[in-house]
Length: 299
Image (cartoon, rainbow, N blue to C red; front, top):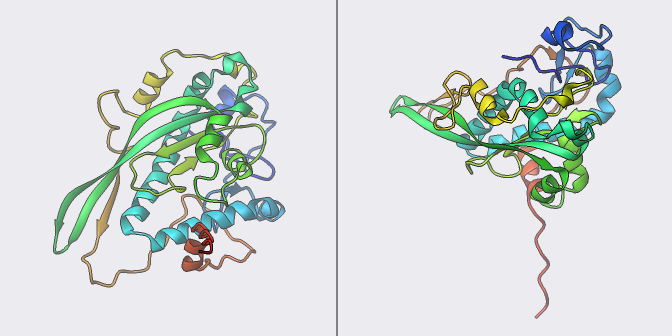
């Protein structure tokens, strides 16, 4: 699996030394960290120390609260939606390292580096749930994904697609912040079109830092980038992705039996937090996502 360049401290931009430091990256100035710690609440953003976490908390708090709300909202939805969303997030992270090179060609960056700020690499995938066996002892199955399409679109097209799709809380400003929470990031958006995951959680953003890329990265263009991208993740144009990269197996206990409480293990070493990490009320989370009712007109 390719190491993601965007795996860096959100405050000081230190990163774990990788193959890019010796081959491609020449201007990282030795900003290396032995390991990166993960926010204990959202399990998404990383830091090199608790000091950086405290310094960046004011900017991160809003996104962190949103991610925690999504995690708890999933618990009051159907188990199928919850396990599909977790498999979806896992799949997006697994293919993130394979998206950077085709994004250069898809966004046609050879026309100018400014297109990083005005275009988005938009990937559509389809989730499929397969049941291996089902009996009185439980159910075992697997969730797989297939890339349906990938293309470069303008920010205007993304605004037309994302703005207000989840109600009044989703605004153009929220769209901009979701696709890239700071300048200088390559915007990558993955959308599941299976219909299993409801909006607005059927999309996943992978903003990638390009500050340490070679100065002439934008001159690379591959006319067959889509075919090469599908081959890199083990998918041909006429068949789904190979198992192992995208397969997320699951097992369900028989209905009626008490199951142990579910906990989400951190994908990377977790950093302690000084902030309130009590989960929000699931019922309140659903209520905030509901659209306000329209006032009735008098007869």
